[in-house]
Length: 164
Length: 88
Image (cartoon, rainbow over all chains, first blue to last red; front, top):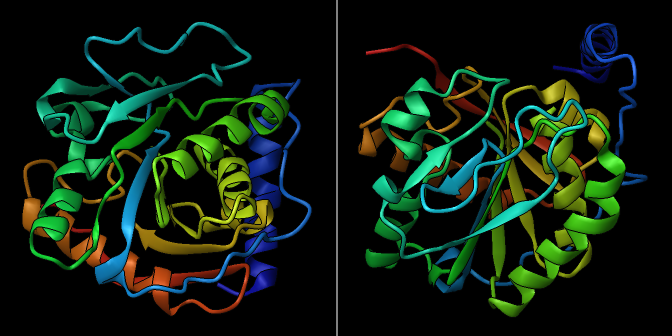
């Protein structure tokens, strides 16, 4: 898609969402931030973040009733079994995700690549979120910097982020 | 809206010195968000890695996304991956 097509599609989406949530204001970034990749994949420890309402079944689910969304996160130990995880989200069809969380949060596939030496390793922690957050400002100002710190402290060399 | 949320967290993590790649199912939202790198898949929401209980499919997609992580060398690039959605 070229920029014109992307712009037209984005305007259509924005109109649709604003019709449904009058208070919605799109929150983007001022520019595309950039950190160059300096290692081969085989030397990189990879972290994972999923916004498909990902949490451990033993953790409190996200607040799905709040029309402002829920911008909290859940720490997912990367050794968690796929069956210990679930998706709580009302803005996409979670049937497949709750049959196999790897559809939206490839925790097993990452482990397989690490075991085979294709990636250097897996971050000790991953992050789960629920991406229905109409007001992006608390996410940007409060949650996002904390998540960045968690991945830094975990020693992640790169992070994969997956929407719902 | 998941894409807006990914975009904001991606910016923070990338700004903290960690390279990030995201998956985009709605590339127009990712484009408007301005992120470092993304890989566009023509898959439905709910299935960014594919279908349930198809670990080989998840591996194929994940490998392609991670290849894009190392291949993309321009900020703001959204690289389309050559997969088409077809439920088995």
